[in-house]
Each structure stands twice: as structure tokens, then as C-alpha cells.
Image: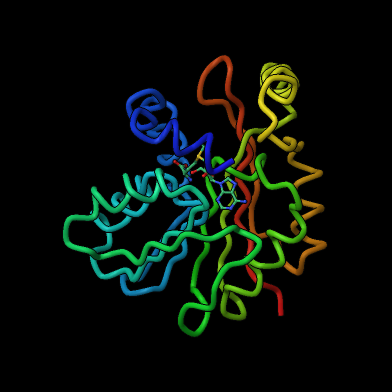
Length: 202
Ligand SMILES: C[S@@+](CC[C@H](N)C(=O)[O-])C[C@H]1O[C@@H](n2cnc3c(N)ncnc32)[C@H](O)[C@@H]1O
């Protein structure tokens, strides 16, 4: 997995620009900060989300975690003022940073997680009690996405699986989160997504 994204890192933003813009716009529809919250972006990829968040809320304290050195290197390059804490780690082994995040955002990556319940448990632990978790990923409820994911599973060993909105919501609730809102939507003919906003229940 790190190797795949290390290879993609230099042209990832350019190749996926319309997709990145459309999906991160959807994340922005559900985030609402006072201004100085702590936020974890995992996996952060090339750091696009962190840069956008800082434009809107310059006082946020953001950490970005990713397993790929190459993607992190691109993220660091954009972060000219060193405003984000970048950490190389697997989502299942999130290091302890501070007192617990106010918000964790996981965009466009859940389908890669080989042990989704372990990833959700690590995210749960990384949040402060009551902290918000936002998950955005491909959604199996759309046949186009289902076909893409079946094809990719045959051709790309890194991809683990995609979920219907209901299956993903079940996994999230089983991991100790309470769902506040969820929806599915298309960004174009091919890509259908699920977006779940929830909070740590204890
Ligand atoms: C499609 S990119 C999405 C990046 C970013 N969230 C975005 O929306 O632009 C998927 C990212 O997940 C990372 N990744 C995959 N599996 C991971 C894992 N187990 N732990 C941490 N990062 C992982 C990859 O290195 C890659 O940067």
C-alpha cells in the first residue's frame, strides 16, 4: 500500500483534481468549527483537506496521518508555514497526540482498510469523549461504484472492500459511535459516495 501511493504521490492531485474537489466540498458541507478545535485527518494523503480547513479556520490545530511517505512528502511541501503536524502511521496504530481530538475526518480511504473495525477502534480512541467523526467513502449502493470496486478488487490488491451506507453505518455503531446524520450522493455518473457524521458515544 505505501508503495502504491508513494508511486502515485507526484501526480495524485493533478490526476484526481475534479474528484478531490467534489468529495472535499461534500466534507465541508458537514464540518462546522468554532475555530480553534483539534482535528485529525486520517489518512491525509497529499494534505489537501488540511490546507482547505486552514483557509477557512486558520486557528485549527491539525494533525495529518498517512502510511505513505510519498503522500506525506507532498503534504509537507504544501504546508509552507509548518502549521500541521504530519505523522507517518497506519490508521490502526494512531499515536497518542494531545488530549483527544475534537474531530477526526477520514475521506476517500475506508475501502483500503484491511481491518476496518481496528481502524474504527483506533479512531474512537483518538477522539475526546463526544468528539465528532466524519467518514466519506465510495458507496456500494450505486451499481457503477459496485462494478468499479469489483473490478479494482481484481486488479488492485490494496483495495479491501467498499460498503453500502447501511453496512458502513452498522460497523460504525458497533465501534462505539452514535450517528448524527448520514447520506449518499453521486458526484458524477461513475462515483457514488456515502457520508456519515457521528460522534464518540461514551
Ligand atoms: C485515495 S487517498 C485519499 C487521501 C485523502 N484523504 C484525500 O481525500 O485526498 C488514500 C490514502 O490512504 C492512505 N492509506 C491507505 N491505507 C492506510 C492505512 N492503513 N493507514 C494509513 N493510511 C492509509 C494512502 O497512503 C493514501 O494516501
